Image (cartoon, rainbow, N blue to C red; front, side):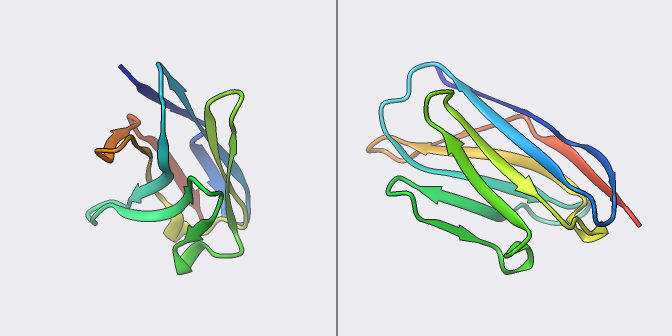
Length: 117
């Protein structure tokens, strides 16, 4: 059984930075995509950033140039470095790993990020 544990959320002023971490426990044989999603209050969950098995990445237009997704294979951890944060970035952030030939999704529990103006 795979578990994803997120950390690094919190309260930050506009213009500040945070780094989210998502550590996986358990055995994962094949990772298709690792990603970060967010759900602002009263809105639907949206993709923020993703890293694919070949190393390519993609970002939501709203975070390009400010957020960076990366991974540490040895630690089975994916990160989201968030710089120049804005109040509109306030949301619960979830990590997602899509694994295996059946493209199964694992989700973290979510971590709150609040950006004050």
